[in-house]
Length: 329
Image (cartoon, rainbow, N blue to C red; front, side):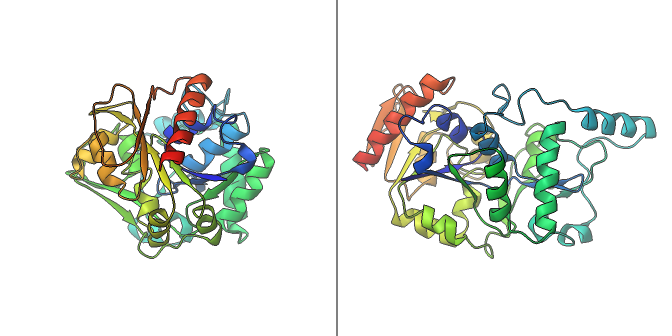
C-alpha cells in the first residue's frame, strides 16, 4: 500500500503511467483542497477532479484540467450575457459578509458566476452540481468524493485532505486574493508577498486520511507552497508525515522549474526556488527523486532519473525511481 499527495498536475502526471509499479487497488490519493472555490454557486475542487477524471479515463490530457472533449456552452453564454449587459469581467468576489455565510466548506473563496473567470465545461459542471447538491444534503466532502469516484469507476481510493474549509490566499501589493484568482484570473500577477492557509489551524484530517498516512507516502513533482503546503499546514497531517516514510519528487532541475508557479511562490515566501528549497520545505521527507542532470546534493538518500513527465513511459520510469527511493528511505 502507498499514499500519494496530489496538488496541481505533478502527481497526476506521475500516476498516469504508474499502474505497473503502484497498483491502483493498493493506492490512495489524498488531494489538496486549498485551491477549491465556490463559483456560480458550485463547489469546485480542481485537485480532486484532476485525479477523478484521470482515474475515470476522462481527463483532458492537453490542459490537465477538465474533461476530455468537453463543450463550454454555458460558460460562453455567461460571458456573452456579461458583455451584452456591460458587466465587469474578471474574478468577482461575493461581499465580505457572504464569505462566511452559506456552505462552511466554501468559506473565504466565494465568487460570483458573472463572466466566470474559470472556464468550466458543460460535463465538468455536472460534476460540480452533483458535488454541491450532495454537500447541501448534508454529506461530507469525503463521502461526496467517494460517490463521485464510484461514478467514474476509480480503482484508486481518492480522499480530500479535510472535510473542513482551508483556503489558500495570496498576499500581494494589490491586496489579498485567492490562489485561483491570482493564478487563473490574473495569470500569476502581481508579485507574491506571503501565502496564508486560512482555516488550517482549525481544520482536522479525517480518520481516512490519517489511516492512509500510516502507509509510505509519495509526493509527486508538485508545488510545495500551494499544492502541498495546505496539507502540511494541518497539524494532524504534518505529524503523520513526520512519522511515516516519505519520498518526494522534485519539480525542479536545480533552480529551473518544470512548469507552474512554484518558483514565484517559493521566492515570494522567502524560500529558495530550487530543489534545495523543496528539500527545505519538506523536512519530513526521507528520500528524494531528482533529475539525472540536477546538480543538487542533499543530506538524504537520492535516486536519480530523467524526471520529465510527458507520457506514460515517462510516468512508469519515474514511478520505478520512486519505488527505489522508498526502499532506500
